[in-house]
Length: 114
Image 1 (cartoon, one colour):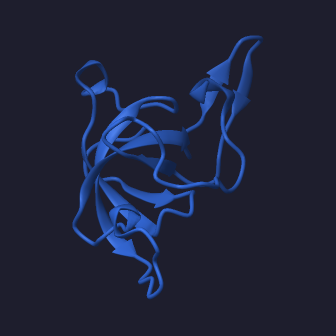
Image 2: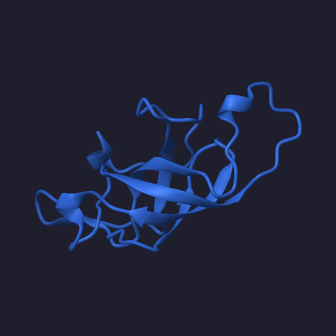
């Protein structure tokens, strides 16, 4: 479960590497956000890119944006008493139109994201 102040790894090539959760959706406030839900994050660490063609795609440290949770260390329980757990809390950054900043995603993605 992802709560406020949770440190998250970014699993795409948007330029950010580590983010911190600053707000979860209202219906998951007490329990925590699960894979497939959107949260609001702040970028803590990013990769400096010298030769970026489009400056609008560049992610800066301290930037606030939405993120989709694709994997959680807590895990999820599926139908048939099957439990699946990831090794890290991983997210994908979203822009203002709820489309990903990145062009590629790294690693496995939970089925609940669909």
